[in-house]
Amino acid sequence: MLRSAITASSTLTSAAATAAAATSSNATRQFHAIVMGPPGGGKGTISSWLVRDFQFKHLSSGDLLRKQIAQGTELGRVANEYIKKGALVPDSHVLGMVLAELASLDPEERWLLDGFPRSLEQAKELDAAYKIHAVINLDVPHEEITERIKHRHVHIPSGRVYHTIYNPPKQAGLDDVTNEPLTQREDDKEEAVRARLVKYSAITQPLVHYYQQRGTLHNFPGTESKVIYPEVAKYLKAVIPPA
Ligand code: AP5
Ligand code: MG
Image 1 (cartoon, rainbow, N blue to C red):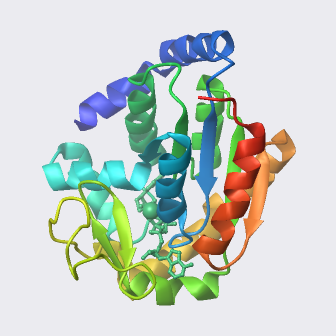
Image 2: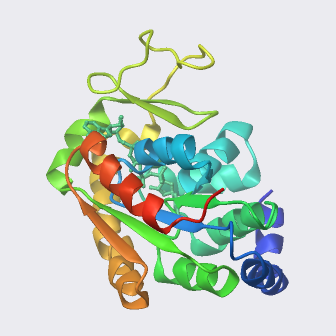
Image 3: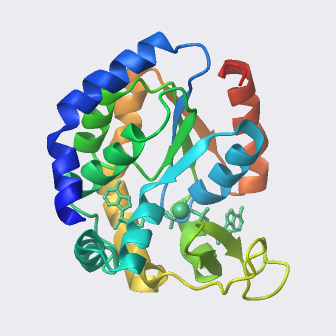
């Protein structure tokens, strides 16, 4: 799988050309969005509501990596070494995986990226392949985050997230849709969360400036996903073409 991710990375140029052509010829229905924000900032939570209300195809690089880990692939084995420490997985591995996934979609699909791009190199490669219509930046204070993440439980196969107090599952410890058990992520331990916040400030937050300069950034400050979400939905309703 690692090899296939790298192979996918090396064929980016032709995938980029195909995708760019598809983008310009299907400008009416398509919409490509990115949800950015610190670890535990609510990207997964808000993405799930956007999928429900706007029929986006949702791709979370973290969820894709956790699936590779669960399947025991070579890419998963390498990624796990970085993820458990709260470090970023090297660009080449993540780029190959995400761009291969995007290339497999119907070119008319409306998609939403969560947790990708996360470095300038990832952002530039993505820009070379696809037009990005909107970047939604969840501007959540870092003090909120450590406390929140302690209460997070996830359903790994689907990426659905719960909070034991604010957004609990219907039955404690079980996913609402499949009834399968929920787990806590290994990188949600306090030390790993601290490392993730440091990486975010140093490597990912500079992307805010990058997208600001390109005129696609929309900032949504706040602490509560339920309060931030209506603002995000209002903005998207105004700019998104009808499905
Ligand atoms: P990833 O899975 O993307 O993790 P992350 O960015 O650290 O973000 P999280 O998923 O932890 O948080 P979230 O913003 O989705 O918040 P959520 O909605 O769950 O990445 C994991 C790792 O994979 C990375 O550290 C890296 O190693 C690697 N990786 C991934 N992408 C990569 C890339 N592109 N390049 C390199 N490496 C990459 O909410 C958090 C909790 O808060 C939930 O419990 C939720 O219910 C709760 N919550 C939400 N809103 C509220 C509220 N208002 N009040 C109280 N609780 C709330
Ligand atoms: Mg998430």
